[in-house]
Amino acid sequence: MANIKISVDGISNVFKEKIVELQEEPEFQWSLARTTYETDEDGKPLVKIAVGNVPLDYDLWAGLRNPAVAGLHPAGLPEIWEFYANRRRPRVDESGRQTIFQVPRSYDYARKNYGRAVIASVMLPFSSKVVNDYVEAVKGNAKGSSHKFARMYNDVNLMINKATVRTAIDLVDGENAVLAMDNKTVTALSKEAIPETHQGLSHGPSKGGNYPQKSIAALLGLGQFGISRLLFRDEVVDGEVRRYVGPIRSVILFDKEEPVRDGGGGVMYPTEPWRKYLFSLYDFSNTDPGVNGGRFCSYIPLNDGGCGKCIDCCPSGAEYNSAPSPDGGYADDVGNQSHRFWEGKLQFDYASCCDDRGQLSTLYPEWSCARCVTICASEGVRRPEAAKGFYSRMDELTKG
Image (cartoon, rainbow, N blue to C red; front, side, top):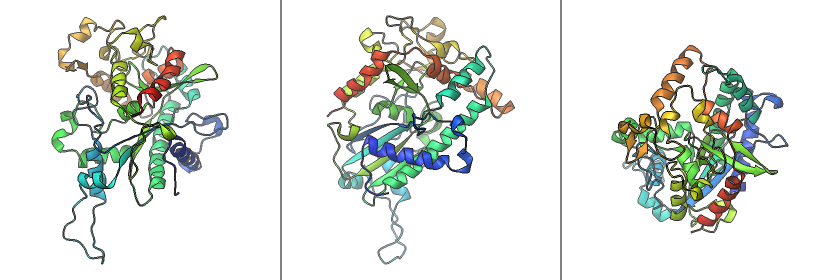
């Protein structure tokens, strides 16, 4: 498919086409009444997407290199390019003979030949019906689960992986360089383009690789982090706040255009004021009403009773053990765990979370927890003004 417009609508339409195509394949053939992803009134996939662009000297992770946040060594544009270039290095000359020097093109080559990097972050939201049914099924049962939710989770993750790769294929035009950041690519990049001394625990505990999809999504304004550290998207639709949660993937494209800085086509530019705004938004020890009023997550009260349902329903206690109190301070039993703080940031308690889930999943392969994300999506307290204001604030702050 040629001449796809690099815009929110252009890339979103391709993703939707790929999801619809995949729905016809045997492994995804569910009846319309049991579709595992969220759909619009016409039954089409309700894909959520954000697109940003930056020059090649842009540091994606400035101010975020912390093992308790995005990790010490997240893959930036140079590492992403080097992974691509290594896979695409010349092997034969113009006559078809094997070359002696099979050297990948350097990042300096990329800087000279490409004007910008475009990043599209996409979410395929889970079906709200399946999410709501799951919440009802596990209420009051700390060890309960639902095979229907587990099937939905696996299906939607597999579907967005495949749609990401197919979308990337369609975006290739011979002049650009395109990477599909699906799970397989993220795993390979983390092993091939990141030194072994910067992988695994040297990067940070339980990071799942060196390319944090959720942090990319947050940077581009696809959604917001909640106190649970999960990313979700709120929108006002017909006067009510709709909340979307689901797996996130991305596509990265290097092309010869200069960065768009005026918001054209919905393509944003992550300026320094935008980054500072996001840093304050996701620091839940900051209870300033002016900041708190912009949060989708209503954990910290704001003319309401606050929320905290994700913490209350966590059977392992990991959520409680990973968050400040609603007043911005830390309870003594959390704050005294100095070994879990790095430069003031608290590492999520993956040990408690994963141990409990891991044990049960070895006994019951279709067991899943996901209480934090589903209770948030189903019953979390919404703030209409935050949902309205976030995107207008983004429009204001992302024009360079």
